[in-house]
Length: 279
Ligand SMILES: Nc1ncnc2c1ncn2[C@@H]1O[C@H](COP(=O)(O)OP(=O)(O)OP(=O)(O)O)[C@@H](O)[C@H]1O
Image 1 (cartoon, rainbow, N blue to C red):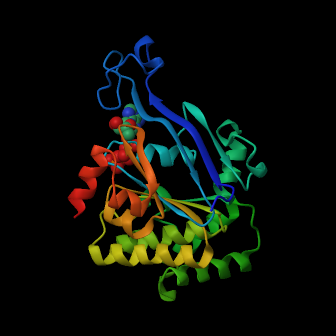
Image 2: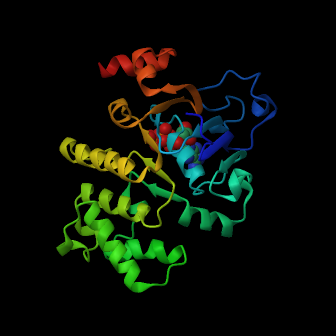
C-alpha cells in the first residue's frame, strides 16, 4: 500500500475533568487505569493516533472502558475532543484539522463524508419514523431535494440490506435487532460516504443474526470499497472483518498492526490474554 490515508488522527485526547499539576504532563502519575489518582480526571482517550487507508477495514478492540466508543463519538463529532487533530482526505484535500471546524462544517462532514452505525439503534434511528423516512432524512440533511430520487434510493438501499419491500414503510421500533442494524447501515450508506464508523454493531444480537450482519458489512466493503473503522470488544468479530487492528487499553493504543500478525504474534501482555482467550 501506502496510498494517502482517507483519515489521519493525531494525538486525539478526550478527558473528563480539568486535570491537575500531577496529570497534565502525564509523566509523574501512577495512573489508576485511565484516571488520575490525585484529581480524578478520566482520560477516556489519550494520545490516540492512527491512519485509515482507502478501502480498508480497521478494527479497534479492547475491554469495556478502554475508550473505543469515546474515540468513535469524537470522530463523528458527537463528543468534542479535548485536544488532537483529524484530517480527512476528501475534505479540503486533507489539509484541515476537522476538529477545529465550525459546527456547521462538522454537520456537513457528518452528512456527506461519514456514516455512523451505533450499537444502540435508538441513537442512529428515529424509531417512530418509517424506515424509508429515516433514510430520506439523512439525504435531506445532505441537501437533497429530489423526492423521486430519494424514494428510489431509499428503496434500493433497504433492498440491499435485505429489508422486505413490504416492510420499508414500517417504523424501526417494529423491527428485530438485526433488522434495525440493517436499517442503520442503509441510512449510513445513503449519501455514499467514503468512511463508515461501526461501533459494536453486532453486540447483543443472536449468533446467526450477528453472522448475517457481519456478512453484509463484508459485502458492502467488497462492492463499494468504503473504508471502515469497526469497534468491537470481541476479537472474533475483528478477526472476521479487519485488515489491520488497533488494541486499546485504558484510553491508549497499546498495539497496532495487521490483524493476522496481532492474532498470530501478539506483543503486549494484554493482547496476548485477549488472543489466548479466543483460542
Ligand atoms: N461522560 C463521562 N464522564 C466521565 N467519564 C466518562 C464519560 N463517558 C465515558 N467516560 C469514561 O471514559 C472511559 C472510556 O469509556 P468508553 O465508553 O469509551 O469505553 P469503551 O471501550 O467503549 O467501553 P464500552 O464498550 O463498555 O462502552 C471509561 O472509563 C468511562 O467511564
